[in-house]
Length: 146
Image 1 (tube, rainbow, N blue to C red):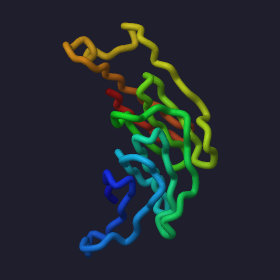
Image 2 (cartoon, rainbow, N blue to C red):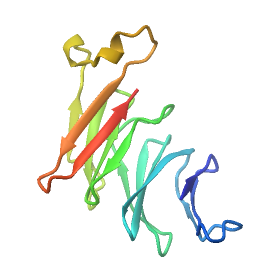
Image 3 (tube, rainbow, N blue to C red):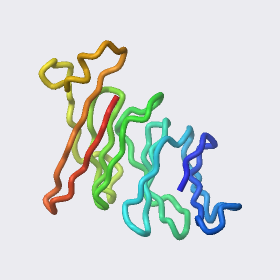
Image 4 (cartoon, rainbow, N blue to C red):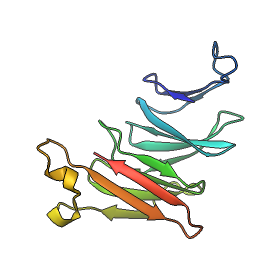
């Protein structure tokens, strides 16, 4: 699986990388990250502020998820197979269910000093936020935001 600035996700068979097995088209801007949800589905994040859930076998977009802001920087992506978590450039964390287009939940980290990790005290022009969510099934979702 590979992401490209041509706004597409390219799926390769590592036994023959001369040609993509499938190309997933639909994002309007560069694809910044791709993760498998399960053996039949992948989710992609793009700087068009959309997540897309794809069927690996057909290459068709199953769902487009909107709500978070991602226009310049990769803001993190994690999945437990059913839920998809991503960061947002507005310092919020969004949780999506793969069967819905709108977020289930949004958590605002705010600007409080107490909520920052020690890394944020380093002289830098960007903030660092790390989040960990645990699902009822015990699967941990770790997210690193800059």
